[in-house]
Image (cartoon, rainbow, N blue to C red; front, side, top):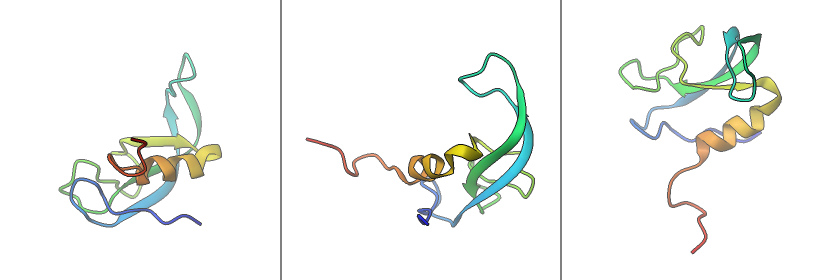
Length: 83
């Protein structure tokens, strides 16, 4: 399993959670109910804070793309870019 890097804003530990939510993914025209993967920060003062029920989640992905979600969270500007 790929480990999550710390929060890019505050440096606190990152967590991954799953929740049943109504969200409107970019690839669909209307809201869909399903189990989604949420990634966020453990610091309540951080803009990317993730509460226990994923209500304040800013990064939401479908569960089919858990690996994709982790790769997106771990991506940092300047790392692995081609010159």
